[in-house]
Amino acid sequence: MSLKEEKEFLEINRSEIIELERKLTACPAIAPEGNGDGEAKKCAVLEEWLKAQGFTSSNGVTIEKFEAPDKRVSAGVRPSLVVTIPGTSDTERVWVMAHMDVVPTGDLSLWNTDPWTLVEKDGKLYGRGVEDNQQGLVSAAFAALYYIKKGIKPSHTVKLLFVADEENGSEYGIIHLIKNYDLFRKDDLVLIPDGGDPKGETIEIAEKNILWLSVHVIGKQTHGSRPDSGANACLAADDLAVRIHKLEKVFNKTDDLFEPNYSTIQPTKRLKNVDSINIIPGEDWFCMDCRILPCYPLADVTAEIDKLCREIEAEYGVRVEYTTPQKSESPATRVEAPVAQKLAAALKTVHGIEAKFIGIGGGTVGAELRREGIDAVVWSTLDDQAHQPNEYCIVDNLIKDAQTLIEFFR
Image: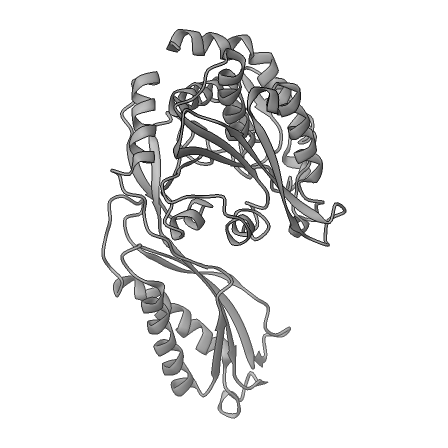
């Protein structure tokens, strides 16, 4: 194996790389939450392509399908695929996990092309899902294809996981797999090509803890001229939102791994309360998006929120209830972890890049694995087009990532 030979292989297959992106883009793998029919069609197209390319038992490769029941989709299931390429050693197996599902298109008037018909222009591929997450999926597939076509056995077993339901909470994807199947081991090395930067130099090893709040304040409705005869739920809700926001000054440590380097606790969505200006609301609803540094357990944060709720109830004569639509915390992957160092070494060898280790405020499926004690990193070379109209993938970035993965698999 040589870097020149790897690059030549990928360049020779440039048209095939684009064609696989085209096939996958034509399959709108949208979850039921987005009024879609799931990943079944896209999964079938991908499985057919893999087998046609030589991902078969004759080459020692196995393809397994794992299905999560979901009556909301026509197939009745949400499928995920695991492709296994046996290595010389079966310890410290190397995984690449990409997701098949995509988000809806949004306002079609903002698109210059049909989102489901791939368009190639000036070295870019346009279409929904071409970057998020087909760039990672296709780069992993062609990196593994290099080993199959060249008849090379990787030093460690390689596993490609093409998973369902990443965009809507992963209950039918990685969470289902972790709960129901014994797929992972503690010494597995997992790379998730689903986030990064245009240079491909940042490796995400940590996430802020996520806490979403949906707060319901119940008071007593009354006429706008008689606040004395009611309990103003809007006023109480406003005060509570500000007090919860000020917890940023309580949980005030900083960590330069993240940007911003502090915990954020922000009011976001408001729901309608009354229909007229001259009505004092008896109910009010608001939401908070809290991104907390990993050094603070979410139990400590919710304990402070509970205290503030009781204070507001006593001061305004209202009742406060809240739910947590999303609540997630996970340990960080250490910089010294084998997966982090192996990826950093691959970037250095192939592209001369000195990796930068970072944390992020958003959540990824990496958190699900880290909670199980499995080290995972998130990386790719991309322009961060996820969920945008006119989403595009730069073909050279895809090829660059595929070559990095060839080295990562070595």
